[in-house]
Image (cartoon, rainbow, N blue to C red; front, side, top):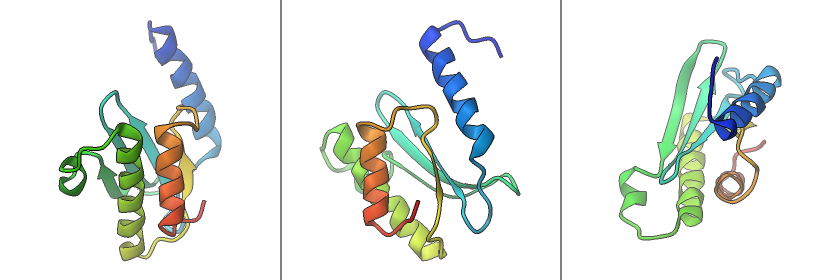
Length: 120
């Protein structure tokens, strides 16, 4: 894969290093985070079957209506994914930060998901 931007290339290398060891299953899906400049998205993925079980993002109705900063938005998304996972009967996940640093929005989302009842 040819990536010209050095920042994107660095993130891609880190992401591939993480994905070598992190693999989700039906019992413990992989909690994958994608962070764009304006939004944040999270999915619970079963890598054995290659399907997304649950997803949540900052573009959903309950979150988009609230006028909060991006770190608070990520916290709301973390709470939402924890609620959806609890409804689906998922308690344990494997966290995949997607090459992003565990800081700021990614950290806020992870801590909110832990407070919501997910274990990782």
